Image (cartoon, rainbow, N blue to C red; front, top):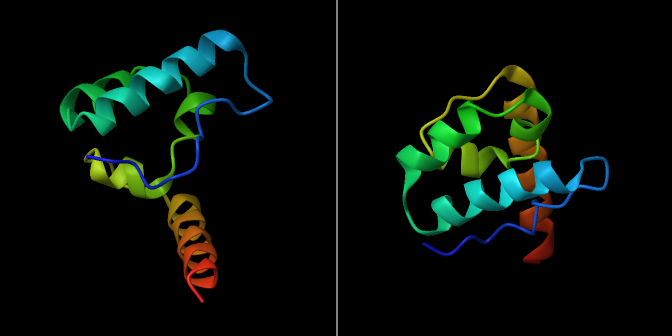
Length: 84
């Protein structure tokens, strides 16, 4: 499963250890191993989980908070604007 999202694994406000965790989650996601990706994400700190794109989170089987739903809508609007 190819990920259409930008590289969200190296946010500047996180350190290399957190980047490694995000890269592991992204790799599992791209391999289609949603259960393992969700388990790893769920065991991670909130600051790490918040970097996972909302659609990826949903694909892995998660649910979104109201803030996550707003972020998803913003992402969809950006994607729609790019395709025009």
